[in-house]
Length: 188
Image (cartoon, rainbow, N blue to C red; front, side, top):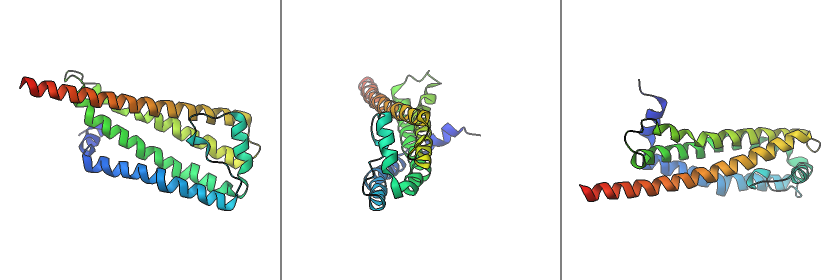
């Protein structure tokens, strides 16, 4: 029976990758801005979501929680539903891109190399933990426990560092794959 990774390798095709890229763009350009617009209609003074910042302070977290007002249900919906699906989408996109380029970039004798494709799950888990903490902040707003904001800010910081590192590593793998394929075609 083929492993889950092997099954995902079968999905690492351009139509699937393109569809996931389109989904990521839809989340970033339509869904999240639409939800923030909805929040602004319910509470005009609401601040932008915390998780779009590379990092944020405890004071910024409290300011966000105080600004929610009538938009609290939308903040909860966003954190617990929409923003729990989004990491799966971008995580699967990164995993499929890694599975697509790892075989070209790594030497054939590295049988464990395909396991590197699961690195994006670290960012997904950090994002999920961040979303749970932000949802709890919204639930208890405006007076949430101090440690909750600290954990949410830590997971935000970690998520963005992981996403940036994963994208840089992916580009390096793509460049390595390009050079490897060129050298193989030149020697053939």
